[in-house]
Image (tube, rainbow, N blue to C red; front, side):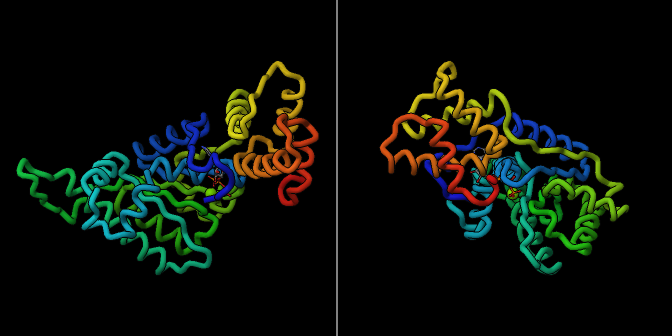
Length: 275
Ligand SMILES: Nc1ncnc2c1ncn2[C@@H]1O[C@H](COP(=O)(O)OP(=O)(O)OP(=O)(O)O)[C@@H](O)[C@H]1O
Ligand SMILES: [Mg+2]
């Protein structure tokens, strides 16, 4: 997670996010392997974590799922999402992957099972053999080794869960080299940057966060918007970074309008990614 600016924490349900949800639902329903790829910083990880309610589930699993005070509500959420999210570590071994997945799947499965088999007295009958997980989501899929991919294919074949791999464009080319895995891929989904009205919407929010109103009919505003769109290409991460600098420059110079010059000054302070 990036910690930049006051917009942090406000998730915007963009069209791309809705497209991701449709894609994920289709993978889950048909129990396919799905690939989701898109450039760095467009929002792939955020969408997937949101889909799996992972900001809620991850601390739940890590802080001892059994005694968690909100266990009942969290298990009800899991019974709806039925998904496990996983980010392979850099240089992670197959054993790491296996152990982390085992733990997560165990907790999620047990939790859903307890939720589904609650009888009228509230007593929970836990059936450990039940397989309630319908989807595994792997972020940063480039990090998966050949054996890890084999391992995932094996889980897929044995359990019939849907699987999503998320990565950068080009990931699908790399996977083509593993015909057994690749032949099981049912969907590929291209995650795109913000465009048009949606970009304007996000920009309006950024403007407002700086205490300035964005007026589409105003020439200065229109010019600044055009520059930002050109510089960032509608990329969420670049937008956040650019606006952090815009805020700083406005403060230092006690400005109240975001002009093209301000945008240009902000851009010039960002070395990486905004050449
Ligand atoms: N829907 C959204 N609403 C608000 N902010 C968002 C949204 N999506 C992305 N962002 C912002 O953009 C940043 C980058 O998003 P994210 O980490 O999901 O990108 P990514 O596509 O996974 O990139 P990478 O390929 O580098 O992993 C987030 O930290 C957040 O600040
Ligand atoms: Mg990511």
